Image (tube, rainbow, N blue to C red):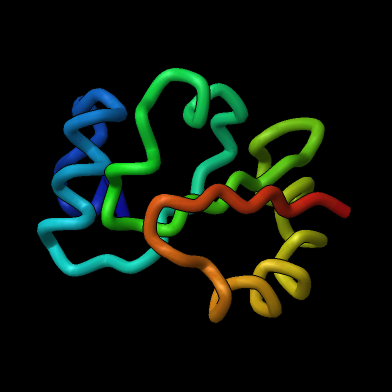
Length: 84
């Protein structure tokens, strides 16, 4: 979605702000450092960190079933980690 929206050059803080302003509920990322770089308690998004060896689609696909279970419980200002 980031590339489709033309946001690929946007830094994380601004990206989170834009996603919330655009009406998104959840922000998915493979960036394990995001929660340490941003004050997420004030973000109006649930953050889901996808934890795989790499961010290649082959590594992320096994996370999808667990991700689908967790998405309904993601709440603004919270961080959830999804791993195999």
